[in-house]
Picture 1 (cartoon, rainbow, N blue to C red):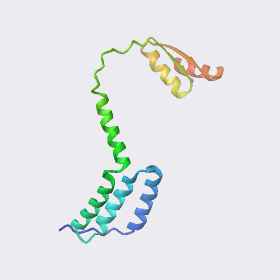
Picture 2: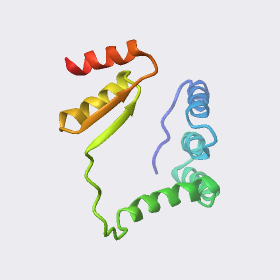
Picture 3: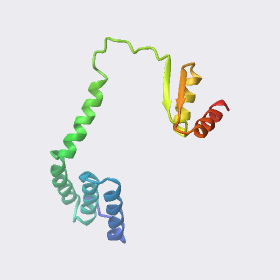
Length: 137
């Protein structure tokens, strides 16, 4: 037997975490189910009761559309690396970058650093001038 530890202010804590998960993990049932599992563990009379509650929650998630989508992504990412690719990538000799701001300028700088010709454009000459100054320094 494992004793269940006391957790003062558990209700306040779980309410705060649930609110956070609802904001950060919208439409994802698993984070809320995990919170319910921890609650069940704390409220259970013994270890077995907590495990049973966790098992019930897990069964509701395992065949959910969200679980199926995540499994599809997981296996697709691994499968993509195993595709037989016969063609070699073409050599990049020249690139065009639209926008000379922080990101565009950084991308242009990376290409220029490895000797690739860069065409950098922006909607305003002043932004282009500023981006070119950052790249030059």
